[in-house]
Image 1 (cartoon, rainbow, N blue to C red):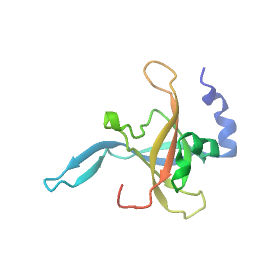
Image 2 (cartoon, helix red, strand yellow):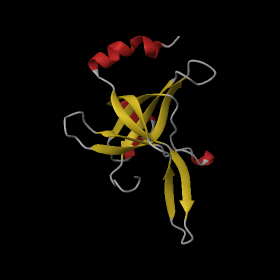
Image 3 (cartoon, helix red, strand yellow):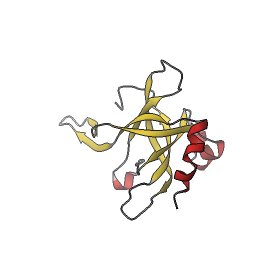
Image 4 (tube, rainbow, N blue to C red):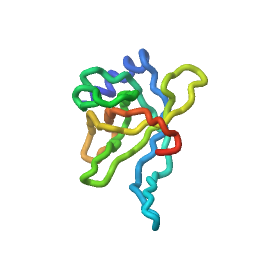
Length: 142
């Protein structure tokens, strides 16, 4: 049973979904000089629910030690955070920090996948909750 789908209308009546751009990491390339450059797939526009991060979330993932701006984002599908052992992750989301008109789009790094749910074995129709952090350098990552 997809409880998220059942309550979706009530959630979006209070906090509407927004369009975000998901930029999946494809890994890194290393130049002959030894400089590493991140690679990214073609950006994809998705519908997302952006919410505040709770103090419990910050404690759970030990983000209290670092300064920054964090958000919880609910997305359809299964996105990736950094998993160094598997050499994967580093996916980015691009959306404004606030929904006020004229707010610029900013880059957010998926730091943690907090929850995932799939509706069937084919992974279709699922959703995930990720914790993202605002990136301060607009040029790295792009």
